[in-house]
Image (cartoon, rainbow, N blue to C red; front, side):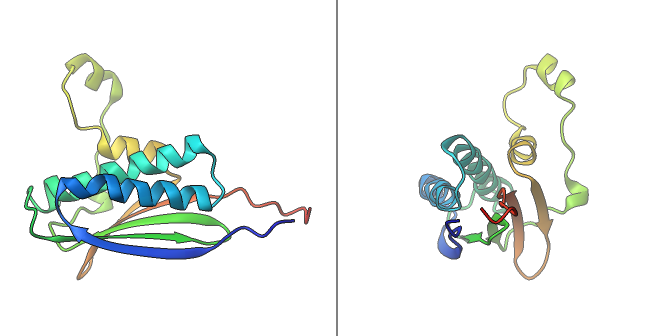
Length: 147
């Protein structure tokens, strides 16, 4: 059986929307290296897009003079994407997912970032500390049969 690749990459960039495409490219490439197909890699990229954009818009109130660190960690079990910042923290308790029936009736644009992240990733956690982190994990299917 071919061994699954593992490793980690980290990139730090200004909190400016011009860097969002770079961040999602890193996340998508990490997903591909981790063995996910194109559809899953696209979902990882979109979840990362939402996380980075939320940090810029909400944690940093749109300021483009702060820093964001994107970490992609590939283990034998999973891909974890971390979006790290020093802006306003979001906790797991703060997360309120919309009622989709009400949301669709309201026809209001936006507000689905956290919902998308939770739908596309297996786990989404918000960690608060000296630096705050949106940690998103996608689990790999590990062949335990030995073949």
